[in-house]
Length: 185
Image 1: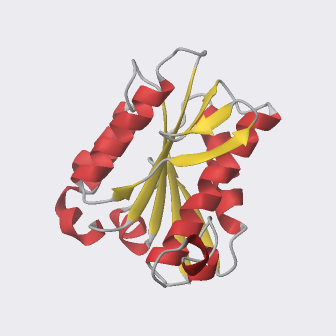
Image 2 (image 1 turned 90 degrees about the vertical axis):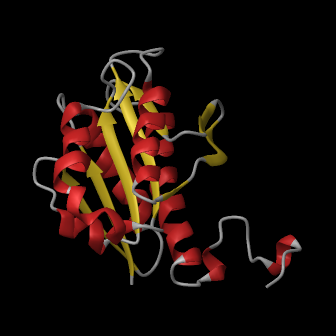
């Protein structure tokens, strides 16, 4: 079973909406169980349980929220090596475009790398002008189809990567089978 945790902090509800969309995207991959937890209710056991983790936070002066940082500083402190090698990604919302959402995603990814997570960006376009190189981002709530598609694609890609790299399900590779790409099979 492919185990995905979508962990988020949301002050206004915008990141919570993004988290639900990320979870929807992850659930599209067969054999995937998805759990959705807020930073207020999440436990270390939830993070240890997962194969793949999507972390979402409101943009707070260009970085992750204090609640999300507290989760990693306090809740996960004694579980440092128990999540090493798992796969993770990030998403964030701010009050407006140019509010630092990609910087917030990078700050989340930095925390995750310090815990040994293998992090990724998405090279595919989720919509005509929407990319997810650092994670899914939106200004305020994800009300536009492009923002929703970006969140779903992030979750889908997380579930695909964990299916491939954790469970050896090469058929779930987003670019096709390894052999078809000219790589050793």
